[in-house]
Length: 474
Image 1: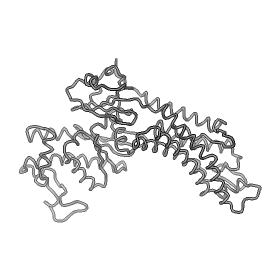
Image 2 (image 1 turned 90 degrees about the horizontal axis):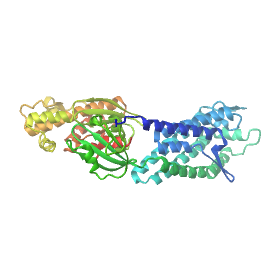
Image 3 (image 1 turned 90 degrees about the vertical axis):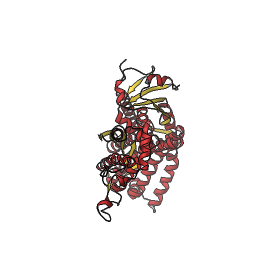
Image 4 (image 1 turned 120 degrees about the horizontal axis):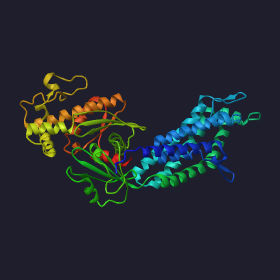
C-alpha cells in the first residue's frame, strides 16, 4: 500500500469553516438567529465565531469574526436600513440628520473579530496551563461572548452615544441627562441579553468542543539522518517523547512500545520518503517537515509569531506566523560541520566528550578578539567579542580548538537567524535540535549574538523532538 501524502486535513478544515460561514449567514438573515427566553432575546451570531476559535484555532476564529461583522454590515445596510439604530453598524445609513460614520465600521467589525481572537487564545492558554479541556472551552465561550457585549455597548457609549439617544427618541423628547439614560440602558442590556448570551456561548463551546476537537492519540515520528524521534500526543497534550536508534527497525520499535490505541501515525523528516506502507497496521500519513517544525515550535513556545532555527546536520530556518508556516532558507553549517572538523582535529567525535573539551577551553586562545586589535570598545562590541574565528588555531590547545569550533558554528547560525528575524520583523527565535543537549556552549554563543542584534533566542527541554511533536499535530 502506497503511503499517502494528502491534503485531507486541510480540506476538512476548509469544509468546517465553510459550514460555519453558512451557519453565520442563516443566523444573520433569518429569525433562527435569536432565542427567545420569556421576555429575553439572546442572539446567536457570536456562536459560530466561538466554535471556529475553539475547534479550528484563533486565526479561523478571527476570520469568522470578520464574517460576522460583514454580514451584520450587509444586514443593516440593505435589509434593515430604516431601523433608527442601523447607523451603529453601517456608515451608509441616513435617517434625517443622523447618519453613520467611520465609527460605525469600527463598532461593526472590531468587536466581532476580537470574539475569535479572545476565545481562541483563552482556549489555547487554559488548555496548556490547566490541561482541562472542558474548562478551556467554557472560559473561551464565556470570554468570546463577553467581548462582543462589552465592546459593542462600550464603543457605542463612547463614540456615538449622543447620536444613539437622538435616534431612539427621534420625533420625541429625549431624557434630560441623555448619557446617564444610555448608561442605564446598557446595564439593562448586559443583564437581560449579555448574561444569557455568555451562558449560551460557554455551553455551545463546551458541547461543540467535546464533540469536534480531536482527542484521539496521534504518534508523530521524525526520521532524521542520525536518529529517529517519536512523540505521542493527545490533542495538544504531549504524553511522552522517545528516541529510536539509527539502526533499529522502525516498525519493530513501534510494536515494542505498547502504545495505546492510535488514530494515526504522522511521519516526517528525510527518511519518511523511504516508507511505502502503513506502520503496524495503523493509518500512516507523511506530512511536511517544515510545517511540522513550525507547528511543534508554536506548541512548545506558546508563541505564534517567530523564527524557528532547527540545528541538525545542517540548519534550516522556518517562519511561523499566526496564519502560516513556511521555509525561508538554510545553511550547511550545523552539527555535520562540528562532527567532521572534530574527527579531523581530534581523531573522533563523541558529542559529550567534545562538549566537555570545549567547556574546558579558553576561547581567546583560538579566536582573535576585539581587545587583540584595539583598545576600548567599538559601537556595542565588547573587548571579548570575536573579530576572527579560529585565527589562532595554529597554536591553540585541543580544548581551545573545541571551544572555537562550537563558537564558529553557533555564531554563524546565530547571525543568520538574527538577520532572518530582522528581515521578517520579529524578535524571537526558537532554537531546536539534538545538538543542544550536549553542553551549554551553543547557548552561550547564541547569547552573544542576541546581545549584539537585539533579538531573543528561546529554547525548550523538548527541543530535539519539536518536529515529531509538530507532525503529530497535523
